[in-house]
Image (cartoon, rainbow, N blue to C red; front, side):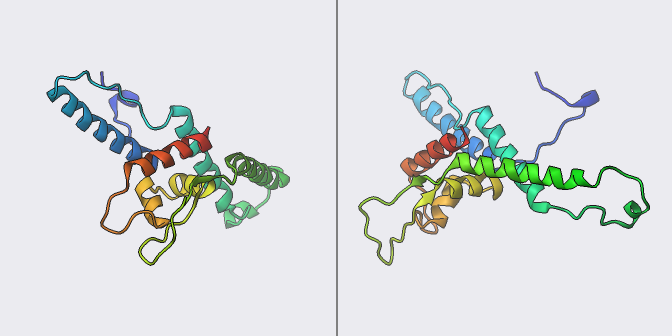
Length: 180
């Protein structure tokens, strides 16, 4: 069955980093399943990288951040200056509530380290930096970066190279834990 929108119209969804990460994981699963099928092995079960609750939390965090960050000026248009309207304090109360909710989410994310440099001396060709949980959540949820983009930004992947699977899995686990 194909699920269509209202009166048979197809719905549109703007993809974000979670959709890209899901697509890459599904492609990797398909390739592994094809290899296993050709080798006569049982097909592995597909496990998505994030639960629907984790994706929902990431998207909620993004929506709240964008709403709070835009902090428009109340009644800035000419049409709204002619009197009437609602309580003038409602705007500031809603803004403060959004700020409180955003601070609460950031506090729950914490300041832990998602990926740290262990026993590696920095050199000219190897300048890896720590990736904090908050940096990871902001990069994926707010800036639509993939795990490889985050690793590249922190110096874990050189330009033109692909990220190591173990690093991508570690970041995925850290992001899932932060979104829980």
